[in-house]
Amino acid sequence: MDEMVLKVQQWANKTYQGRSGFNSITEDGHTGRGTIRALIWGLQIELGISSPTGSFGPATASLCPTLSVNSDSTNGSVSNQIRILQGALFCKGYNPGGFTGTFGNGTKTAISKFQSDAGLAVPDGIATPMIFKALLNMDAFVNIGDPKIREIQQKLNRDYYRTLFEPLGLIPCDGIYARSTNKALIYALQVEEGIPEPNGSFGPSTTALCPTLSLGSTQTKFVSLLQYALYFNEYDPGRFDGVFDQGVKTAVTNFQKFTKLTADGAAGKQTWASLLVSTGDKNRKGTACDCITTITPARAQTLKNNGYTTVGRYIVETSRLSKKIKEGELDTIFAAGLSVFPIFQYSANSLSYFSATQGAIDARRALVAANNYGFEPGTIIYFAVDYDAVDGEVTSHLLPHFQALHNKMKGLGGKYRIGIYGPRNVCSRVSKAGYAVTSFVSDMSTGFSGNLGYNLPANWAFDQISTIKIGTGDGAIEIDNNIQSGRDMGVKKVSFPTSIPLDDSYFLAEYRDAMTEEQIKLADEQLTAVQKAKSLRSPAKALSIVLEYDSLITNLSRTYSIRKALIQCVLMRELCTEGADDTLADGLVIQYYGYKKVMKRGMPCPPPLKLLLQRRLLH
Image (cartoon, rainbow, N blue to C red; front, top):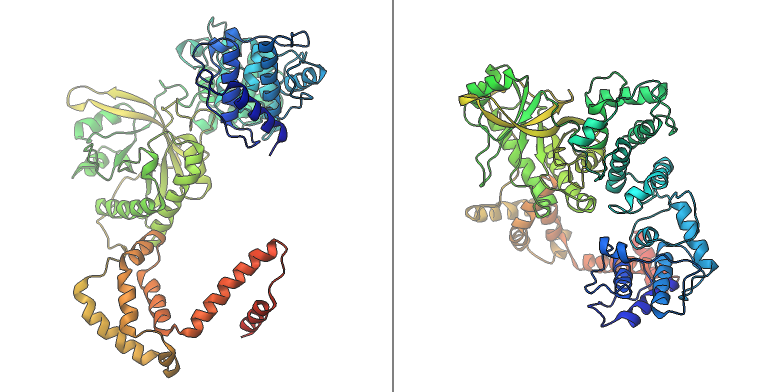
């Protein structure tokens, strides 16, 4: 807990409670969005905004004061504004020397330090509206990532802050390449292009004005922006000085090779587009596609005539769309000289779909569906994540889902390999965790938070960049146009379905009597006289407990790819041999772990318990 942040929270509650819809904030001494929102709300009240929102928008920016050592702290409203500024500094980790409502040298020094961290050329200690806005958010201005990325962020703030202020404000200088940094770089490019109203969106006008840069180019500012963009995409040009030397040419060439552009080392419009926006040049023609439309002979010919060699098709149906591969369709595709890659998607369009249980179910369904179509061992099936998953959701839901999917597919024989369809961040994280071998990237969703500020996954196989219509008459078809890396060329043939291992099923009640008779006989043969004598229950009772939990055991078996019999056999034997001494031993184990917790707090273990544990462990 930070005592000064606590004081800020207490002051905000006391000063603004009941005014203009202000809601009390938790007084816990921890900086959070609630505290920042409350400070903005208080500032808006002081500025006379009739309907405060707690969000620092254009209206707040236009009315926001400039505060300095010359500000009149005898004016009650101005003093409160200074307190809000000082509170924001404390929340940001800068010490203004006190929470006084007076703009003294301590506040000036803190503002100067913040300006320096933000990369501003003249840290004058004056709190302009731009500084206010940058302080009243959750962005970090100290490095928590890559120092070179932080250097670029500071340079962008230094050179373009006047342009950035209205739409973005100062961008964070935390060393992490993300959405705001990506947009700031596009703004900077638009400024250098002379676009009157930069908007941070890489559209036709921006594309048209992109210069072609090559070895020896003298357009220093454009070269600097190119160097930044290359580094963000993990192609280090060696320096950020505006000089297009051999290091920059090598970085451009390597990036072009990775993204399947013409690798000539010259940064033209397509290279700029691929560096700055997920689709790259969306008019670029790919050699792969995917679609929900049945491929007829006429459509197959259209695809071939338009240079496509690989088509993605679905192997399962949904209630909403009839999109799976139809009978005879694969023969049509192969007869046209095309290959196919299979896609699995039931819904997968919201967070609620994804879980470890669902991942195991999807693995089984995909195995059955792909096998029924005759896809051969080693074929990659692409499992869809068809929504904009934020990073926290990848951790909480998607990784457990794909881990279970991976384990279940492996547990059922590993006939097929797993690929992933989704935004860049999702594909990269799932692949780095080892749960997918290749990625099919939904890059045409340029506004997805999982695409903006993230790089193309290292294992990308298909890059989906646009939806287009091609062909006429019976051959007309709408497709998603994909760039193909060569990591997956699809398959050009299928075989007859084979026998595949599947999950154990639920126990059928009609077999209960036979099972009971068999288990009693086995118990009589395998248990010793001592075990029988000490047992708390009969084999028949033990079996009834095992069968009572059949649904749970079956579901655990399916989720974790453990044969059901392995769980049942261990449980059955334990239930048949459990005696009073086991109850005592279990109690000792529970006490032991309780003792470990006690010892962590520095308290001594009771001697009798310690003696019992020692005796138990010796035996």
